[in-house]
Image 1 (cartoon, one colour):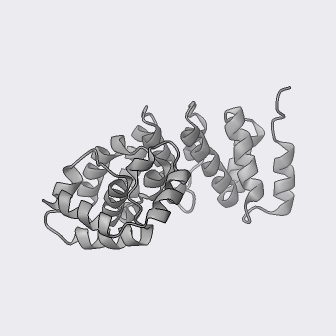
Image 2 (tube, rainbow, N blue to C red):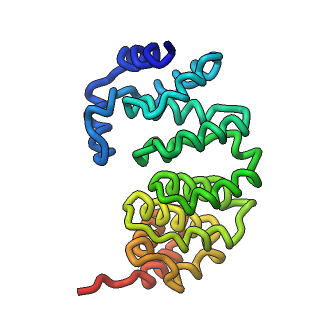
Image 3 (cartoon, rainbow, N blue to C red):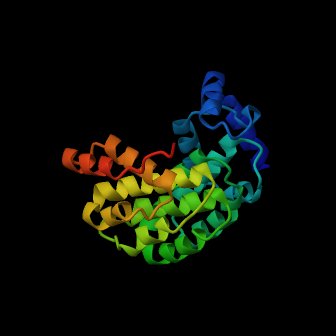
Length: 231
């Protein structure tokens, strides 16, 4: 079976030192969850598997035993060329995504050609109760809708999200920092009017100040908009 074949191949490519390092970067999951295969190796393996007729069997085997299998799954989806099939598989996989790395590294290239359909899905994902489904939705807005397809209604949707989840709030902050770099005049009012939760507001400003894409005078102004910590 392809699932066992993949497991054996991952174990062959294991780097124990990398496994230990990786587990520290994703503290919300057990160290036993990691095999320790480096990302370039996983991407290469995913490309090989995409050519196989039985790759669908692996995609149906959820939940996976290892983080590396989840990463492989994400990279396979990212390389799919059939939008409808990709979206179907993605919707089935999203509830099983349990860490920021798999969430953030999953980026189907085919989405660039189907932005109108993608936007409809994003709006639904933003309402999800699943941490990484919401994070993925915000990430897709950041990746695909901050340039020529930008509309002010998109940061408005993100600004309305309220969550107790660190990995959701961090993505919102990242989104607004990137949005300020790309659409400063349009996005600045969200910061000036303090439309984000306090922690997220300050984190977005922090990330903007750390960015090389924000002008020095803009950084200075953004510093003045930080919400002081309550004593």
